[in-house]
Image (cartoon, rainbow, N blue to C red; front, top):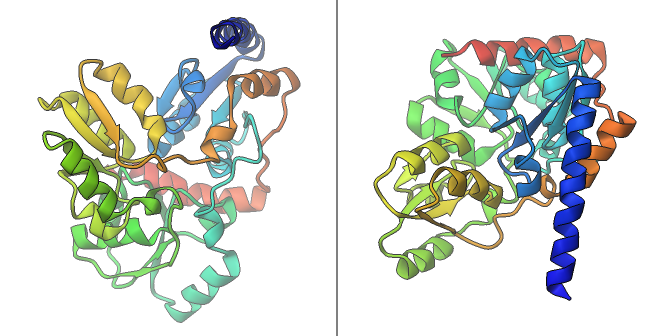
Length: 312
C-alpha cells in the first residue's frame, strides 16, 4: 500500500510539474524559492537562494509574474523592489513569527529615544518596519552593512541573536530589539554536544540566528548560502548542520558524497513548509493570492532595501 501511495504521489507531481511549465510560459512567470522550502518546491524553482539572492533576482527579473515561495515578508520585499510586477505567494498564511515580534509603534518610540541613531532592519520584517528603516540587511551582508555606517548609535531590529553576532564581529555597540527566530532559537548547546559525540569527525556549521552560546561552538558560522558554499568547498566529509532542514536539498545536491546531520530534528520552519507543489500550480492558475504593499509604505521601504543591495 505504501509503495502504491508513493507511486501515485510521484505521478501527481509529474503532472503538476508539466502544468507548472505550461503556466510559467503563459504568464511569463519566474519561480523564486527560499532554501528552506520543501524539496518539491526547490526542484522546480528557477532560482533557489537566501533572502539576499532572491531579493536581487526580484529586482532584476524581466518576468511579468514573480511567484515567491517563501514567507510573506519575502513576497513583500519582491513587490517593493519590483512594483510593476505581479507577485504571488502560494499560501498567504506563510508568515514569520520573528517579523511579528517588532511593531511600528514600538520602533518609533525607540527611535524617539535615540533621535540620532541609524536604524538597521533585518530583512525578516514587514514592509511597515522597513519603511521606518535607514537600511536593511540579510544574514549574508549584515556585518558589511553595519561596517558601512558612520553612526554613533545604531538601532538593530528584530533578531537579537543575529544582532549579538554582528555586534561581536564589528565591535560596534548596537541597540538590539528582543526578537528571535523560533526555529533557530530552539537549537541548544546540549543538542550540539550530543551530536558531536555521535559524529566526532563532523564539522559544526551554524547560522548566526542561533543562540550566541550555540554560535560560539561553530566550526563555521555563516548565512544559509555561505554555509552551503563552505560545505561544498570543504574537504571534510561529515557536517553537523545548525540551520533549517530545507537547506539539506542544496547541500545534498552540491555534495552527494558527503553526510549532513541536522543538529536537532526541530530545525524545521512550519511557515516555510506550508507551501507545496499543488499550491504553487494553483496560485499561477488563479493568480492568487497576490502580494500588495500600499504605495506610501513601499516607497519608503524601497529606499532601505535598495541601500542594502548597494552595499558591497
